Image (cartoon, rainbow, N blue to C red; front, side):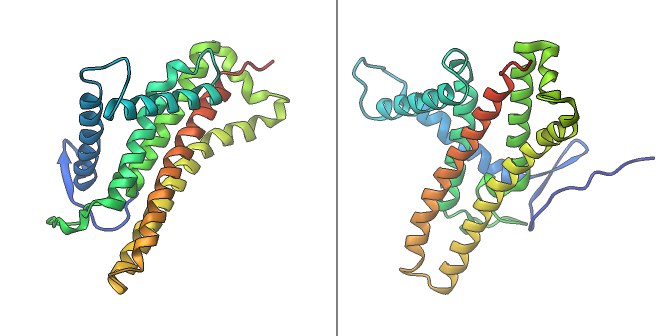
Amino acid sequence: MIISLAEVSVGQHLYWKIGNYDVHGQVLLTSWVVLGIIIILSLVGNQNLSIEPKGLQNFTEYITEFIGDLAKTQIGESEGASWVPFLGTIFLFIFVSNWSGALFPWKLIELPNGELAAPTNDINTTVALALLTSFAYFFAGFQKLGLNYFRRYISPVAFLLPINVLEDFTKPLSLSFRLFGNILADELVVGVLIALVPLIVPIPLMLLGLFTSAIQALVFSTLAGAYIGESLEEHH
């Protein structure tokens, strides 16, 4: 008996056939654009490094220090530094994705089917980011504690086992749907207002959208760090 898994899909999509799988082509396109922006800024900002940073180097060092402080706060002084690359990648991808949806005129580019939008405007992207985070904190805890990691499920008392297991399933759900819902709602509201009142009224909402987009990237990466830090705690 073949069990079919339901595909989560919202709206029309441009499908690409890769092997036996259909993937959302427009999400891959915008994701590559976002990754390209991050890579280019990183390479340009870290060329010809100077002791006294200025310009783009100063900006990249500020972002690195910001993520480093976040990792130390959520994970700890001793082990936070090793998780800076992961948290930094998550933060930058979500941040640039969200801002690309607010600033880039994606919808002006016509596709055979579907339309371009921020990668985080697709539920599959946010679920993938949430699952990566789940894998990261399972890996962190198991790497440090070994089989003792599973003691957390019966801590402080054994009858909490079902609740603790359920908590690990709800973490990726809450991460993915919070990010997806906020970004989708923001783009829909701005799009409707631009269609109805195309001049002055949408501008404050677009600025508010930029702010909330940055907050969503911070919330996601902060929670990811908190979950990793929690998995590293020893339970007796």
